[in-house]
Length: 411
Image: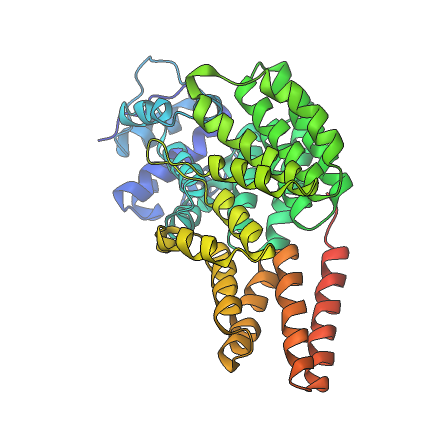
């Protein structure tokens, strides 16, 4: 039987009993028999009451729960250390040693599934972990809400994601802590829906907190995101000034990955300056493959660059070298859009692709920039075909989407 290495306190009595009972497949009546009433056991499992030691030990003995003296280590703190050091093997060693309680292992596995974009596994784990959510400590709940929010965003359930982030932020505030990882996720979300001021506000909060806890690698990530957002929103000068600080944070041991990020920003800056040959040079450097790692966002960036400058041969040659099956669907749709447009932008297939695939997905995923690109292209296609009612229909669909974005919940 599982050896639960945990310091028992009143808060966790119920979850110990419930988990052990479910793991053994017992019904409440079978566990309560000869010890207490079923209604009493139900209140113990729900955390409504804390049983006296004599009752608790009888229940523990019946469920074969063992309590060694090894002190329990906070799984959230260990997971965060593993996350910030970008080395999930740290947390894996603890999981393998059976240090954590059963529901904590499930929770950590859920976090990892979300980070690895394994949404099917995350869905299955979340269903199980939700059963124990009313037993969570404040720290557990705050982190569980955070990663649930990320999960919902990745699954395009925006309302539920925003609600989870809002509650996570409230719990962090009540505990008088600033969660930099949560602030970073909020910044990315607000940049995506074009609420730029809020994005920069949360990004500055994340950066300041990462500096306090000496997470240089994550300060670098925040500064890179700041530069990219500044260029995309028409402020390349301030991004260029910030690059001086960014380059001081480069870690020689991880120089390729960090320089790749820098090259991408430099490509964007030179593109804004209309220095296209220089921009192309840095974009190409940003997608150089080393150690089997490429950044698909940077690949899409250079494809956009080639498309807008009508360098179609370069775009086709690059695409033929890639395994697009591993790309996320929103990036595959954008590359398909380029190909349709290059091959035959006036075909019925192109119109159907925009109407049935590209636009619905971009709007569902709040992909504001690509939704605008696809919508404009579809309206232009219908104008060329003199289908003016369809032009109006597409316009109203875009107007409705824009209003939804504008009224998106503020956290």
